[in-house]
Image (cartoon, rainbow, N blue to C red; front, side):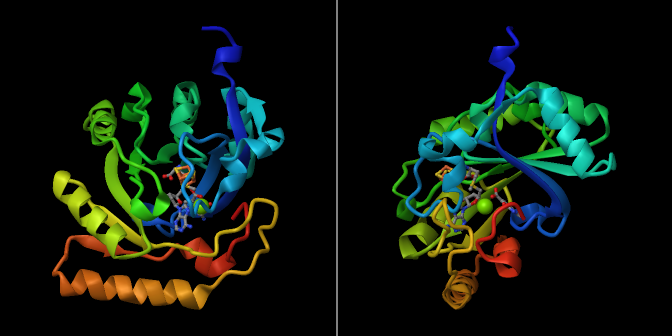
Amino acid sequence: MTASAETIRISEIFGPTIQGEGMLIGQPTVFVRTGGCDYRCSWCDTLHAVDSAYRHDWTPMDAEAIWQEVRDLSGGMPLMVSLSGGNPAIQPLKSLIRRGKNDGYRFAIETQGSIARDWFADLDVLVLSPKPPSSGMETDWDVLADCLEAAGKAPRIALKFVIFDDADYAFAREASLRFPELPVYLQPGNHTPPPPEDDDARIDLDGIMDRMLWLVDKVTADYWFSATVLPQLHVLLWGNKRGV
Ligand SMILES: C[S@@+](CC[C@H](N)C(=O)[O-])C[C@H]1O[C@@H](n2cnc3c(N)ncnc32)[C@H](O)[C@@H]1O
Ligand SMILES: Nc1nc2[nH]cc(C(=O)O)c2c(=O)[nH]1
Ligand code: SF4
Ligand SMILES: [Mg+2]
């Protein structure tokens, strides 16, 4: 393979911070956010890493350069590296994961499950976040199953759903029945995501908390006791701020 084929499009690398969502919530993490996505969710909170209008902010980097930045940020102390985006599954991340694991770091990915990669098997944690009706996107369940097959038995795997309304909740419920072996995390949607050019944009935390209360009521009323309901902790702490 040529060197250029191994170039990874990077939107931002930041941390250490804490993982704000899902099964690793609260754990110290460095984020590697890739640029580009095959989806366009109506409420995406990371458009600066999705919309090609912002591609001038994305830097092509090879695995070694990314790795040096992660090592600098973490003082060379191994921790969890979260690969997010955009859709990180678009990028050739195998050699980055191999490099980091060599130094004792662990790797998690956040992806919508629309592209399966053989290197999912090299991850420690695979978070699949199929998109509910409010996003305007459609899930190909065969591809999601391909993602699980590619990952195999090595990574811990979880489903994570963003919930805005009853239709989203019903979608999450049905999806979790398709994959009964997977733990399920539910998070209330942020209806005030930042426009890409303004990460200081106002956020309606009261509205998000009302949605979370509604979600807790739904889950308990349905006796859905295997589900875990969590806020986006970084949103509670820092609002729409980028790079935290
Ligand atoms: C920005 S995405 C990047 C990774 C991948 N494209 C995905 O969607 O899983 C990271 C996580 O943020 C969630 N997310 C995006 N916009 C959100 C919003 N407005 N409210 C709550 N969660 C959101 C996504 O569903 C996903 O779980
Ligand atoms: N602290 C923190 N936690 C996160 N969990 C998922 C994030 C993402 O944007 O993928 C994210 C993020 O951007 N920051
Ligand atoms: S799949 Fe993820 S990054 Fe892509 S548009 Fe949807 S929320 Fe944003
Ligand atoms: Mg985010």
